[in-house]
Length: 401
Picture 1: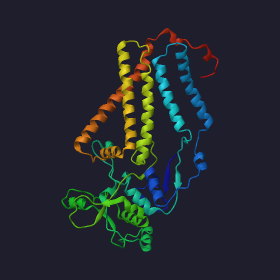
Picture 2: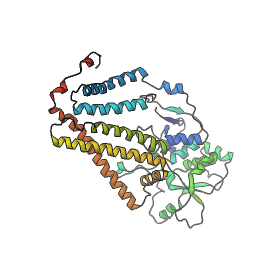
Picture 3: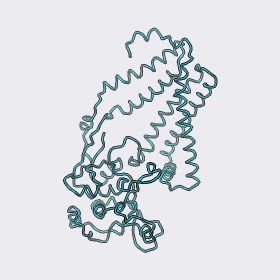
């Protein structure tokens, strides 16, 4: 839908410094949830959502009918005792997946390019969300930079003690006064990072990587204005012996430059891991099962038939395995916690190696199996039974493309 975007006042020159020149920041799903927790309920009517849709129900229905005609053809040919090619089976598998997609996305607006712009005095909250997101960190450089993610600036900070919000602080922030905020609570570098700097092993004081003082002051005041944010900080557990009381932040993706079309850390964990996972792997299971159904179909050679059987079984098994895993993770939360710990690289070394090897082997073999099925579906038409060119008489009565 283009997402929900925060419109930063482009007449204010501070935005060029505070948010790296961004004039509009898009909320992730977690960002929208945090907004609601802070009392900013997004009031979007159904009519506004429908107005963004560029495809009506009739167009979708015609697509489904045309796609479903292929399934009817294959069923009718089988009922009439006529042979079916592997290419037809392969197309049917994709048609079934397409119909599942249309069923789930029937009411989803299509080709939405413009986001729903939110306007309000949310600068402190925006600053906090910005610091908690990867876009606030320094872009990785060097080898394999494209496979690395920027570290959010908030992850380098800690919240020291607490204070009570005062109107003067908020007014100062709104005017971007660079004077130190009144009170004892503040965001600062983690003590462990400060120690590293003293030893010359950290570069956080580099102007390119240090969060600006204005952003930190805005984030501090967000913690005062929205007490719910303080629950996102946990007591330090990194061997602090200095006697200083501080809390560590929970960092996750809250803002992005634009709405992403692929699963990412900004999605709500339950939605991302379970619902989406079960739907995707459920569709993949159906995809593999349809190819398994061609077990005794005609193949140009026995070797090709063997590879087809092995590939279709493996695709079905892998998809069913991950489907069941997602289901078990929903029933038994500790399984999901293991996967979350693995993604955050906080799992034990042995467990991480075992899971990584399983994922790599399973992933590579799954891709190879899927690729073989696609190639064989086309290669096999070089030698097919004569009956594949016959069609049931009744199917010629109905107009179709």
